[in-house]
Image (cartoon, rainbow, N blue to C red; front, side, top):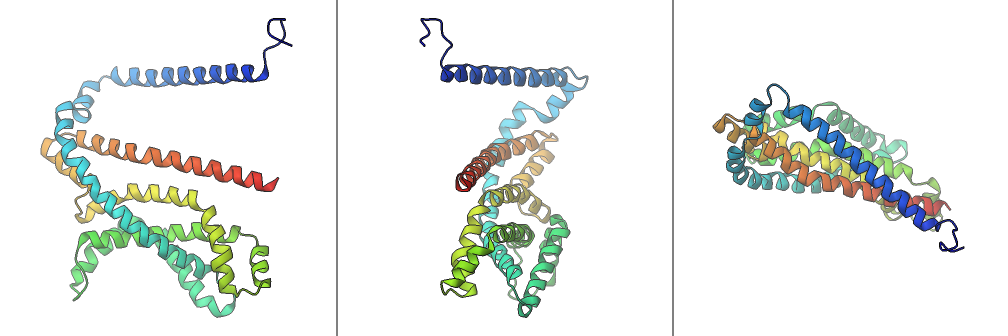
Length: 280
């Protein structure tokens, strides 16, 4: 029945109107909420002092040319550590997945490693390695704070990422390995060619979440003297007696991290759709 004859609108048009109405309501409620929060903040008794201390335009302009380039050090830390983390964590996950009593010592070592480095706060690992190892003055051992920052981040995050890998390995149904063994593959070949490819593909979204955390935790190495973005903001803050450089640093991380978080959401949604399609 057509609209001219007084019939109901087509379902697609009703859906479009409902979606538009929902979008407008969401935008309106968001604007009202943040507008109310902003009004409360700017009408607080000490807002002028806070504005001068955290949102000083002149200091902002002076800090940006120092702080933004310093983020390159964080990127280097992140990229180098990520490569080592992916390899070491996969080795740990495979060791913990080896069956049989003969591999019990390897499983025990991998388990102790994961337990220790997940239990000790990362900042303590960074302090112990960043200050302790160079203090030993061992010949041939580097004293660079950048090197020990990478080592510390690698040791800590490998423990977490190994658990993500292990969860992916355990999520592969045992029938997959059994089918590979029935085709003549050895246990190691079944793990390498059948189990691990499926496991790694399944854990990509949680891996990205861990690496978002790694990117933020690169600021912890500032405590052993690495001049990265947070350390540079501390230097600028001490020079200006103003906290605006910290806000600049926070904004840089927001600009970088939020798109990565949305990418993780997209990958998780795509993986969920693939799983639902495969279950039908």
